[in-house]
Image (cartoon, rainbow, N blue to C red; front, side, top):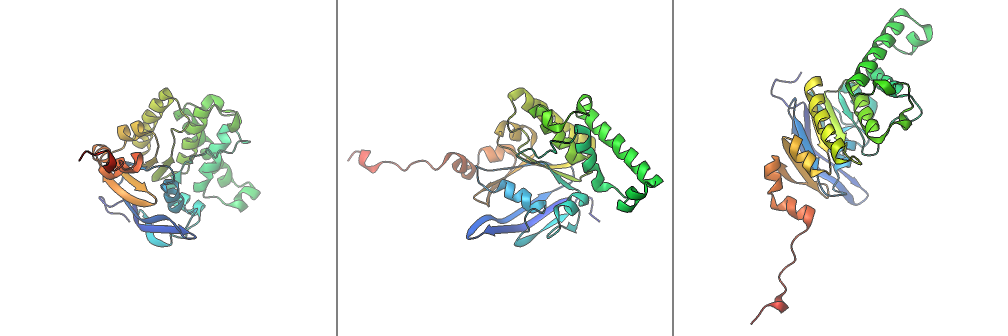
Length: 268
């Protein structure tokens, strides 16, 4: 049971190494309910590895992950999703050969209460729950402007619609916290503006806490309240967008350290 002001997602000094490479070192993060925060860093900084640690793809070698007070370390991804932590992926991972509607219906089953036996026996409870799932899936498609594509195969959607479907599918699991991994990747400027509005709407409409990885700094600075910056798996800065933009360590990580003066070019 979380206290009113407690973090909904509390990450305490998690680390992981692959062979001799330290991919993430002592990463910590505290997300209060309703927060919209960013996680940024140069290519290869370890951002997606952090998401993989949070969602059970990898198990932290040190540290602890708490979601609404529940320890997630060592739990399988499906159990973590059922606990209330959902994500999208940098590379879209829809079920391409399923319809748009069925992609969302599958995700809704994370919260299904009737089991395999009820499905085999075709019980009244099973049919009632399936009807509720179908209704919820249709409602999500309507919210995301995808109702008219409900019977299309997911792989036939335009790229921007596939991104929206992936977010809708994540929301179908009923999350407390939503992790968005580069949702604007491949989008044009108009699509990015629409995405910013969509993220704000989703946060407000569903009462979500959101953590965003994104390379588009304009989008990050516009919608995130606080930002954490990592480089080579190490946290180098935390703060508001204005603080991050002015931080020398962040500027160096993205642009590189300035070259030292050329002593040979100096006069006597």
